[in-house]
Length: 291
Image (tube, rainbow, N blue to C red; front, side, top):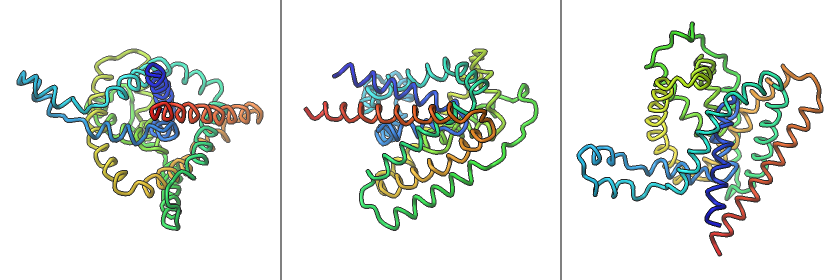
């Protein structure tokens, strides 16, 4: 069982990284539907950044104390999965989006729709207020998905500070279910540029983007963790509504690129089936912890 759990987390990381590449799909959505979202947000927000100053001062006892509460059992397999997916799957997803655009978007549409349907009944204390929070999340996601991308000019001349800021902004979206980090990059006019950066292994740009992302996620996760602890049911209801509203972008992409209905239907059903499998595996892992 001890080897099984890291493997499952690694696979979830692969799905999260793959999702983050696709405009309209959020890695946070995958984290929510696979049951690691709250653990992930809490683990990120609990990171004590003082270990950096302790390390610089060569205070290794301070370093040990600062990193003692870091959830390495989550971070190590998850980050390996996310990193591998982003590096290796950028070419694969580019190929699928170029050659099978409608079925690719349909796969994630089915995945997210099925997830929302399966997750919503798990919210504790369903009430009119919770329904209103879901409606607010839906409207926000629906409106956000309809925004037109900004024009940033020649992508070849994008300065490094813009890459840094894009990493900070995009990572906040990546951890929010329903708001796609890839769509944020597309909206900022940075999506094609970052795909090319990954394809060509431009390490300086990748490093600057990652630094921006780390700073952004460490700050934003603390806010999100507080909200989840104080208003868990309302927050989850809003996030699920956000997921459903953001499906607008996937639907529009499917509608504009569809050639045949059957590949789209089959791909959507496959996404639904995968969610059932992942949720069943998550249940078994949780049950194994209690034994």
